[in-house]
Image (cartoon, rainbow, N blue to C red; front, side):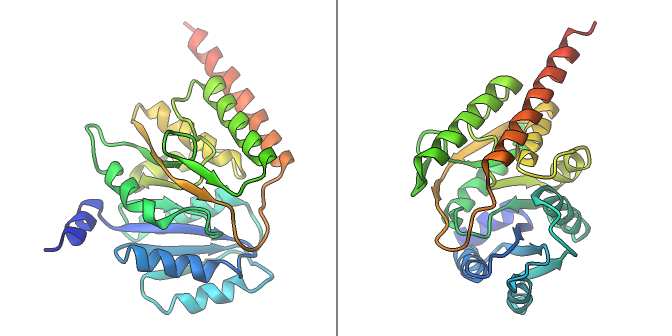
Length: 252
């Protein structure tokens, strides 16, 4: 048995969930690169009725039995896309779910190290994050205001929630399917704050969270869905969660 096959056996059945909305210029390139880099994983594209034809591209890619397409009736948000993806994966016997953007910003080459981390340790982690802000991590081609926004948001989340994570907003993640399904059913967030709340709920279980450094690349095509208003809304939620956490600790 090859070392690659034995490594994949240790991971179990893995599906990469990739939400899309108007990613026609990126999704085929990103999915094919992922499959070429790690032939042992499957991919689920969750498309929110993209008007640019991304859904049709997803259907064409699904001719490969490792690639699947899930179509939703409208733009319902990142969080709900992942929750539906977790449900889909759980029903089909996958053991690990990975969150990955369709814009090419998350390096497929780092995913094997993330999956190795997920099946290591005692206890095993409840979450592995591909992190921009741990030693060895980096961001390429971001404007200064986005670097500043991300660093401040993550430092605030870490402080307000007492969360031992440097990149709580990072969207490149791997979970055991049992943890992802269990926690997602309790999460209220549906937008940008979904990632922070998922990390918080994993931390609340007492399971370790591991961060693996990645080189995050700015998208080559299309437009980011991120905005300052989305970040402000997420930080407002973090403030509420932080207050609630402190009140719970003060109760006898």
